[in-house]
Length: 459
Image 1 (tube, one colour):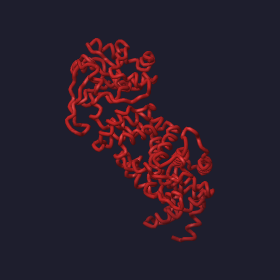
Image 2 (cartoon, rainbow, N blue to C red):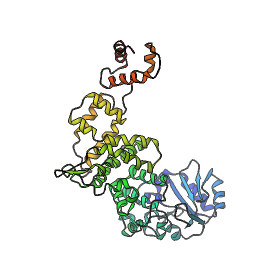
Image 3 (cartoon, one colour):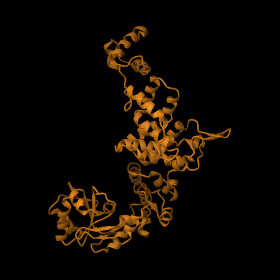
Image 4 (cartoon, rainbow, N blue to C red):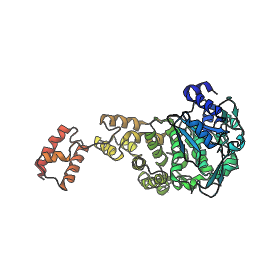
């Protein structure tokens, strides 16, 4: 563990440690911060737990040097403005009802570390680093589990928060973990129905944006009984596909492989990766509704179109983010289009209309590539000729990352002497259709076309 690198990245940590020790406290680095250090990564944000001080004494000590915000008195978390440190008191949580908000918190400055660690979700998140001595304290054998990449719940208190099922999902995907069978069985008893959308969304974002082996995380969700909360995903399990095109198996297996292929090609832009990753997850949701056997073959006609309302229902239960709700469904609807256009060597007009429908062709090609590579081993790239073809064509049309915009606007009609009215929208649509068909490609040629159009139509 590289403690010198930790202090180099966080030079205020030594000052804070000494301040807390001088006040009579014992500061520990806890949770994911210690886990990441043990894995060789310097965490950007540090979670610190301080024993030996009451809330008021801790607040006085921190306020003597820092501007302090207290986040939710119920949780007793202190934030130092301008510094990436969250500071908390040792606490015990007692459930009082079925919801995640139904619990009481008791603070105990002298709570033994083993009992304090028992409320944490997994053993690899229950390791403490004594910031005064540099000693690792591991009351639940988290270091052993971390070394063998094993996810195991810390104590019987694990079942008090069903969100931990989804935390397990994204941890397994991010850190390539196996899960202890007893933890899986415990997860099967934890319904997700009372979890608010916002908490579910945060775990899915981590799965999609940080998961290296997303397939393993989603497979765990299935094993833990969590797919029942996501019927759109559950329906993919056992949905047969034609082995000629999909030798890997059912739609669920294909989707998992495609998600791993997506993870391999993330671009590091969170917004873009999230939109594309969700589209890959949802791209075949229409197959359970449309698949049937015909002359010994399995067909799924129009599954891309029929999957759109299913995708929308799934996304609406995950998030209120309008960008996600708006941008993902078109990628699902059009994910077969590049292959179809490539097969017919489609015209520029057809490509322009696809760009108009989907908005961002670069996103669509990423979805299609993951779909292609999800048919076998996603870590072995497969030829993707339609992608190369489409990329060159759309680059030539300057439509790879934007949709076509009308070159002729209402003000141009007014300058030509037309009076604004309801007929303007019909005229502009007709002109835009001509632009998409390639009758003009610049504003100058568009104005020339407008003159010709007005002479022939005399509106």
